[in-house]
Each structure stands twice: as structure tokens, then as C-alpha cells.
Image (cartoon, rainbow, N blue to C red; front, side, top):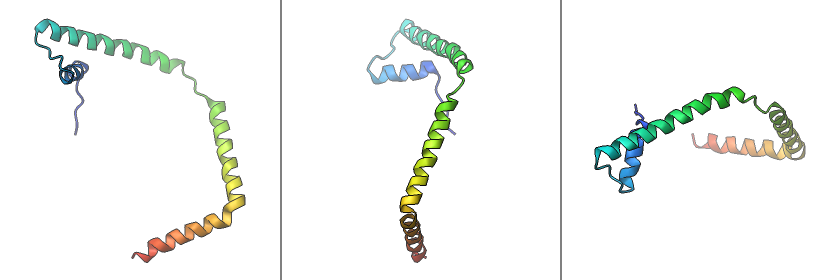
Length: 97
């Protein structure tokens, strides 16, 4: 099981990788305060964005209809070839046993 680090810990890790090692207590507190404020700001905005989101139903319907149309056109033009390709693939897999 993996544990996720808190925002200040992740920010501290990034600072250490960049060579900005937090040597003073003031700098450490500033990192923790900034990371905490950023996390709270993001958390405040996310629920509001989710509440306003209604989705794009017409877009999904259009995508579904277009996908069905593409499948129908492919099946009508290359149906026999697709069936043969599938059968050949199954035969090759079955031959390995």
C-alpha cells in the first residue's frame, strides 16, 4: 500500500530536488503555509466547479451516433475481410496450444 505525501512534504521534496533546501525554520514555515493555502484554494474551487457542470449530453450523443455510423460503414464494406482476419487470429492462437 502506498501513502501519499502531504502538500508541504511534496513541495519540500521539489525544493530539495531543485537545490532550494529549507535551511531555516522561517523558510520551512513559508513553504508549509504556501502549500497549505494553495491546497485550500483549490479545494474551495473544485466543489463549485462540479456543481455548475451539467455535462455535454448532445456532444456525447453525436459521438455515439458517429461511432455507430463508422462501424456500420466499415462492417458493410469490409465485413467479410474482418471476419476472416478474426478467424485467422483465433486459429493462430489456437495453434500455440
